[in-house]
Length: 239
Figure 1 (tube, rainbow, N blue to C red):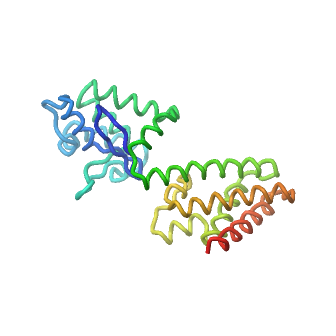
Figure 2 (cartoon, helix red, strand yellow):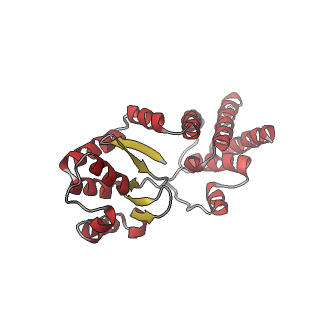
Figure 3 (spheres, rainbow, N blue to C red):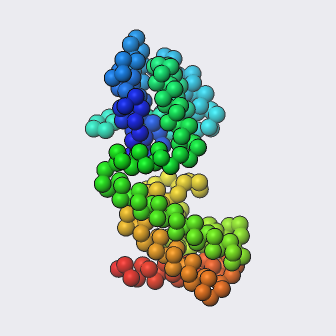
């Protein structure tokens, strides 16, 4: 659960990347920007219905994938960022501008935004984020090594799955199925990993990169074999 500040109020973003319209409404109310406006549920039934349908059609998904209402503690209405921008525009031009600024920073890769988010995260979330960044560094090192050792095309995916097989006894697709998580080719499995699993994956990739360099391993199949072998060594050490 990511949190950013808009109008000096926290606005949540869930694991699927959907933005809390409930939090946007609360921020607008707190700042005196919501006079005469309605909450997300009524907005969906009135002004927002056509735009939500348009976004769903444009993305070729069901509305339930881009607009969700949850109950209980931490619940509320969450929607695709395009819908969040439309709702912010409806609430207030000033709020709309603030939301635009936050998402423009996110789209441009402004790392200071990530730092601000980390400051507001819990200690557990901060620990996960630190390990995730280390994981990205290890991954970048491995892919650079693979590319210099004649790995091409689907070979990169094969090496990733070989690492997962060595560590977790399954490919990304098999791990997702076992965990009851929807498999998406463009979605990183690492975003769902625990801190411990991220550390193990990073270690396996660092070991593989060193072994591939040391023994001059080359080609898709040979490098995938080394990735799995290195991952099994790491898994054995962590047992």
